[in-house]
Image (cartoon, rainbow, N blue to C red; front, side, top):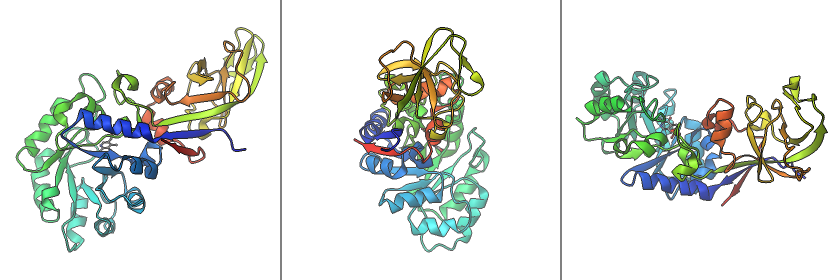
Length: 359
Ligand SMILES: *Cc1c(COP(=O)(O)O)cnc(C)c1O
């Protein structure tokens, strides 16, 4: 029998979340972010499930873009980081990919590519993230050069928010202002909003929104749970209890004995560890659901297993079903406990965990 450790990919919930994007930004087109193997859910699975709801797909690099074309996706595919070498320009043109042009050297590659037809392009403006994009002062110059190479009617001006997940002092207003000072003088389409901005900043929606995390049912907001935003988890990470034992007061559990029994305790060992994507830094007390009941992590996370204090739940036995994240607990709760973000946990889900696709 196979190891009972797997990630159920719930495509119905993925589709529900995409419709939530539509509901929040009804006048915008949706560029679904499926980079990093669709945040660990599987790029083919996710793009097929979303294809009839969204208007395009965004990825980081050309290998991800080609995976979408190989899966038969015909919609626009945007390479967010743009070409990473000159030879990616004709390759992208050949596959009808859309290039986000972020840097002067990328513009030069486009100019030197000798393309026979204009290319689908976005142009990124650096309004404050200071990671990629042209400075507002020099955007007009970059745009003028790009206009000679791009399919002009389809050109999109874009920027990215650094802190839209924070409820205040997030710098969004200043970023929108900096964007508009440059973009409003052109007739081109705009794209600003990530998941957090889709949910909280309607004036950033414009022509194209770029949801990622919310599609997968996580909360992109620091101060709101996914359920209160009507988002549903697209992944349920499950495993089983493979051992149960009693430990006496003063006995310790796991590597370096981090957890110590303060009362006669029962410890359940669950077959999922950091080698399966469970965060190694999760502290004692991180919630694990077994047989539908919450129980605290007890002891360090091992590569293939975790240990859980199930003293309160005498019915839990070998074979009991454990949910590491999904509806309860949410991946955001586990991430918060482990001092990280759900994005990192999902994107880090290793190949070893089979993805089982369900409706
Ligand atoms: C990943 C990414 C997004 C999506 O962000 P979420 O917070 O996951 O919604 C949007 N835009 C760009 C440029 C990105 O790299």
